[in-house]
Amino acid sequence: MPSLTDGEIRRALKQVEQTGKQLSLVDGEGHGTGRLVLAMKPMPTRVTADWMAQQWRDQKRLKKKLGSYPSMSLSNAREVFTRDFADLIQKGRSIKIAGDTRPGTVADLFEAYVAYLKASGKSSWKEAEKGLSKIAGTLGRNRAARDIEPDEITDLIRPIYDRGRRSMADHVRSYIRSAYSWGLKSEHDYRRSSQRRFHLAYNPAAGIPTEPRNVGTRWLDEEEFLRLYCWLECPDTTVHPPYTRAVRILMLTGQRVEEIARLHVDQWDAKERIIDWSKTKNGKPHAIPVPEVAVELIEAIKPNAHGWFFPSATNPTKPVSHGTLYSFMWRQRERAVIPVVTNRDLRRTWKTLAGQAGLSKEIRDRLQNHTLQDVSSKSYDRWNYMREKRAAMAKWNTFVQAMLNKRRPYAACEKVTAIIHAAADEAAQPMARL
Image 1 (spheres, one colour):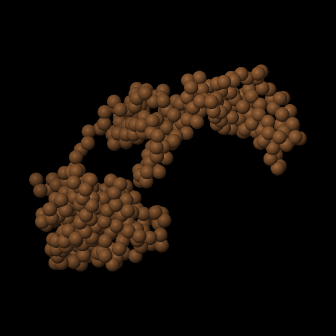
Image 2 (cartoon, one colour):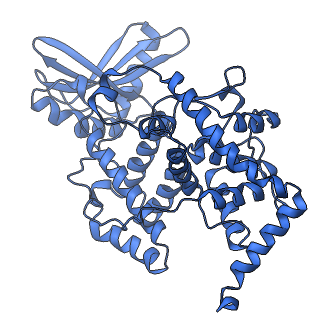
Image 3 (cartoon, one colour):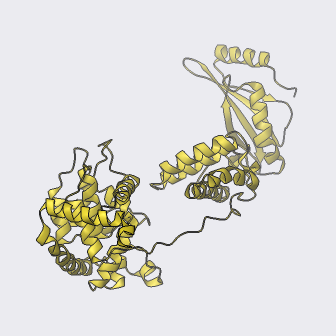
């Protein structure tokens, strides 16, 4: 049968409209294997025309829709049929599993990876989206993802590294490596469907070395802990009050910064005095009983209209970010009014001082939601350890209350500020003692 023409299609559409009978037009040859068909059906107000890939397989006729005429033109339908179906039919494979065979672009890969992070509930998806969008603009959004070479990624990262932004350079490498790693796996992941196949042969960022990690060791002793806590209770400068409260809760509970920063009324059980997260960084639910000293602080806080205990100073509809808390602490460190410490150091401080208070490492791990790797913990033990956690937190509360009681001789804000200023002056003039 000769190839279709646009004139034949228009005449056939008029015929279906007049007769009210279905009609199918076949484009070219292909009897016995497969062909492109335009199926036209009369409807009450119009005639529909759909492009179908048709195949004879195991003595059965199979069909799969490609698009609708005229939005998909005759030439476009032929192109799609040739590209996505013809070779598949020749190999005897079912058209039911056929899809768009065009290799995905860099933008396709990065957008699909971000969508995967978002669907998986990963809180990092916004940062990944922002970073990958800039990277795609440099590599070329419309280039096939499989065409990116390792040298291109190295050339992208090196200027960032040379500017002294080593952490950013490593983040860029990590974003690209993770996106390509996901792309390689998604090619054959039958549990998910993607609009594009990427046909990746390897991960171009896999061989690029990472920036050496500096494992933190800093923690606050009792005197430093008390100095920081007193400043947070009565800062010597104007600060957003929720920030100081959030850091104190970090010090008293030892939890992850982002999980305390995003504390919401729905997570606080005032009756049981428990903070309950349905999902955390390791993907598991987590609940802790709160020590009495932290309960008093939490109960004194009035959540804002959006339910956040620690709202952002610039946008009260959102909680404070962990980055903002980090910057807040950094500014005070530069002024030398608090000990040199990061928010992560506070988690390490709790771990260490709680051990000094007599809490076993196992219960400290459970209170801080560290994943236990033994087979028993991962696969069998489903006890929530709430009774043991309460006993441990009571012991920690006694210890921390004893520390905080040492502030009573200088409980007045003026005296606390004077002591802090004296410590700051001493730290700012190290050569005076030499």
